[in-house]
Amino acid sequence: MSTNTTSAIASSFLNDLKTQTSDSHKKLEELPVSMSIMSPDMKIEDYRYYLSLMHDVHNDTEGLIFPFFANAIEDLEQRRKKHLIENDLLFLNAPKMNSEKVFETQGISVPFALGILYVVEGSTLGGRFILKNVSKFPELSGVQGVSYFNGYGEKTGSFWKSFLNFLSEYEQEHNCGDEIIEGAIFAFDSIYKHFEGR
Image (tube, rainbow, N blue to C red; front, side, top):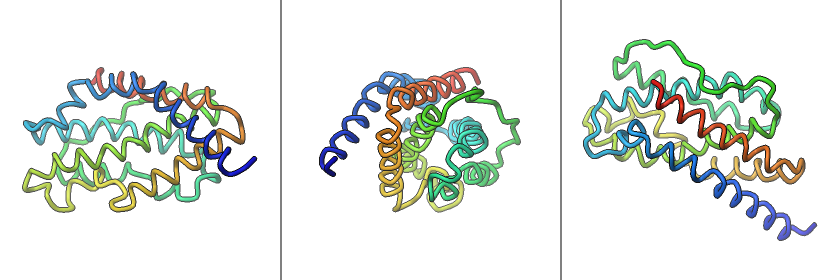
């Protein structure tokens, strides 16, 4: 198969993935807790609350999803973000909260787990926009308290591209697009329930 054919198949799958998850994605973005973080009237409490919800998401992702890819994604360790949220919450004097379960992952397949990872990794891109809004607070205009939304800094774009490359190569090799998409929809819906229920 020529490189052109391979990349056409890859981009067709990535388009399907984006299209088929767009409703779940939109639903999540329209939740009051999601909108509060982008609001011009955002308060520090909103920010703290949002971080604590995302802490649960990353706690589950790193504990349950990362092990699936320990030997497959070379820069997996650099993609850990739970500790960044913990540092930010510490800086904001947030009360210690018990982690809540977000993803029910018993008996899931590797492609399904990859769909979940797609959603969590993708949230880093949105984090760059949130950072702009959050930085209007003088205490959050430096490095402290915003390390999570800073994502991979200048490398955010290249980290996302390399993840998408891994994702499309895996899909082509295993012909498992439907399962990846199912996992991604499941992730959006699980995060939605978590955000709505707390």
